[in-house]
Image (cartoon, rainbow, N blue to C red; front, side):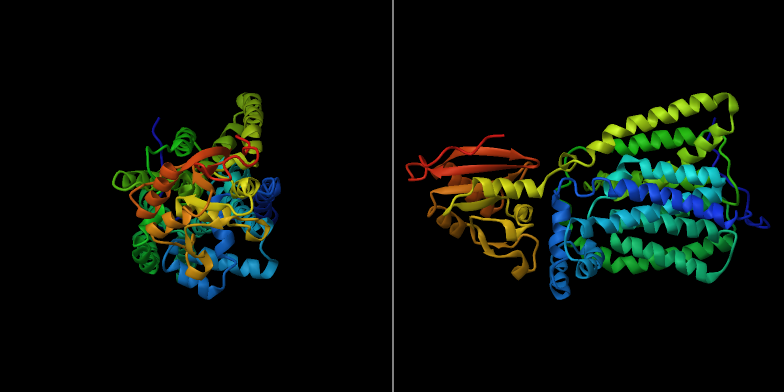
Length: 496
């Protein structure tokens, strides 16, 4: 059976009758409430933070002029998000709750938007189910508790998509302006949101919308692209920011979502109005990932969180499929059993997502390990220097040893990780210490950089490893000078 994503031409097709206000409220509030509850559950993750959140935490506390000076050198793509978080920190103070609550609220808004989309496309039951499915998706649960921009982007795209669907049977210019501004805001928060714009275009084409609708969308889309272009051009000069994306692409979450979504789309799903549900959901689920994977053949760019908004598509398809199954009485018992089994299967990943181990590193554990290993008079070396931010998130609670490579701190230099001394000076300074603690992130780092080579060569030639502690995402190693007075002092640091 083929997937039918076509819709009747919108000409002469009146808009679908809108349901009553209580029904509309239900399809928004129920998914949003569940998303908020899941987002608040374990939001502190045992008072831990991971590296990307550490960047937000530190930059958002700087003055606006400092943020501006920093983003001109690095991380321009997240400039708007840092500005938003600076305002939030000013109002409520810095902390884990003020760092993550905006994402919880944004994802709750996204869930409400998904519910409203399902309502408009396939009726109230499909809307509620789609919104609840969206709230339960593991990726949605994960990034609703992240101090990054992805939840906000997802919320804006969900509501822009609703505006798109609502605009098809209408020609009001101000409605297309709202759509364009919402999409532009999403793209300014993260450039890859523009991939959703491409999916919207495909939806209108396969839905055979009138030329007037396509023309209005084209004008709005052109405005979005023009508005995004300056940011895209300037941020392209900071492409080293994504140099960590290497190795084989593993789009496992996306592939599972595509398989499930396409399987659901093969059913005769209910769909009302000029835009059919499958015509909207399949492109937003499949196309952004396909485009990013294709681009990754030239330069590695694929990261699943960049496509968080694709979950809107799979949630709509699964919600509509559940509504379809509900209309088949002979399958109702099987459907209920399958739904219960799916909920049970979601429990382990939901529990896991609220642990520090669910993220690739834990900056609080790294900082604690450095403090535990440190003694008065020790030196500290980061391998590589750009990872300094991982142990510098809470400077107030750190008995930090002397940072041997640092010439100018991150705030003073308007950078993320500070400016390091020349290679020769780093080596000379290391030779004045008898104990050095190193922080090495579990990731391949190039030794072509002369400063990193100087650190490694000095350690290999003049120091020996004394003890190593492994924490989530890093190794904290104590090195002692051969024949140095500290080589025999005290017990070794616990290995773990």
